[in-house]
Amino acid sequence: MESSGSAAAAVSVEGLKKTVAVGFRRRKVEILRGVDLLVREGDVFGLLGPNGAGKTTTLKIALGLMRPSAGSVELGVRGRQAVGYLPENAYFYDYLSGRELLIFCGRLFGLSRAERTERAARLLVEVGLEKAADTQLRKYSKGMLQRIGIAQALINDPRLVFLDEPMTGLDPIGRVEVKRIIQRLGEQGKTVLFNSHILADVAELCSRIAIMRAGQVIWTGTVDEARPTHGATLEDFFMEVVTA
Amino acid sequence: MTRVIAVALNTFKETIRDRVLLVVVLFALAMIIASLWLASISLGQQGRLMIDFGLVAVTAFGVLVAVFVAASLLHKEIEKRTVFILFSKPVGRAEFIWGKFAGLCATMLIVVMGMGIFLFLLTWLVTGMVSGWLLAASALIYLQVLVVMAVTIFFSTFASAILASVLGICVFAAGQLSHNVLSLTRLGHSVVLKGLSWVVFVIVPNLSAVDLKAAAVGEAAPRWSQVASWGGYLVAYMVIALVLASLVFRRREF
Image (cartoon, rainbow over all chains, first blue to last red; front, side, top):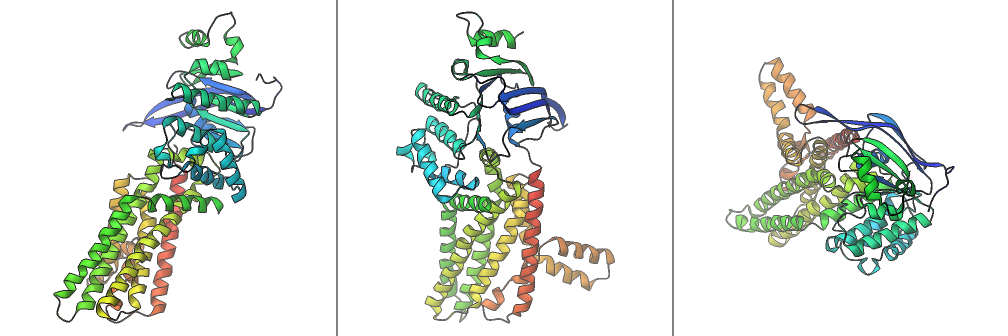
């Protein structure tokens, strides 16, 4: 899964800053304090960090959901046409069925009727929801919602996929299923950038990782570089870096 | 355009599958049927009372449904974070606003015109005769509802759902009275009051100008050219409200 060092940049973040005003007195809070990050094409990239480190904000700015206060984010793909996104704790239109949601998302990408019907059917099989395809989303379990969330992120066959905490709240079976999907995306040569607190999954899935703390990237490298000695875990390394 | 249609279809599904809407519409139909009782105690004015009461019910329920649904649509998307799904895809903020409005237009067409046609048939069944003005009045109630909806969507881009609803209802009430305010100040001599009433008249949509309730009960009907020009003014008002809503919503971060 290791990508070559000369691969083109899929996501390039330089000096990214974000300040927001909070409270009645509009107190300024710096969420991002100069984030630099490079994700190469074909990477399965893990963005790690404690809560409030700025991982989700970085993803949101990359997707245009927030504006940066300073710095820039460049994507190696043109526009959002080739980008897929699964938000954290995603909520979907619960009055739609799984198939209807995928067809709706396909329509937003301007896919033809034949394309969106075919892709929706194929993705439902890929995420193991073909039997629940016509069930309303309000009847889906958390794991099923996460899988339909990944399916909607893939409806446009994106080259770059952002997954925000894709394993959160899943039972062991759900986690295995989501991990398999991410593995498959990596095998298909897609660039995947995901946030996670589950370091064992990150170690298993990612080619490269970055660790964020207090709005900055404090370490970046390969998973092997993070586990230099035999028997060392990514958790040990993470704790060492974050608490340093 | 494809994306506007996609958002519109989704909004239509969302609102039409909402059971609260169904309950409200059933209640409105019950109110229209209740006009039969009112009509039965009137002296020789059965048809007139039915139409009068019925059209007021169509207007009141149409406006209430439109305002509350329009005020909550954007907030629901933001609170439930479905905006993340939409705006991470190539959907523009203006496309979202116009799509939401178009979807709601389709729902309100069914709600308002459904109630109007129901009233038309009921009047015809009870009195044996009914004027086509009743349907024209329902169509123009629909236009008034669309204007209030567009204004409420504009308010909801920067205000809370409750505040947007209240402001929407205020605009509807003021829209029924703005013409009267202008007429009343003409009687006085205060230049300031006259100026202020003109400002109110320009800012607040003159909804009473397309009110055909009187014509529907057999009173003097306005000229069609007059109704058409006021209708054009309301459509322009609606477009301006939605353009402003798109501009304000473009600045929102999620």
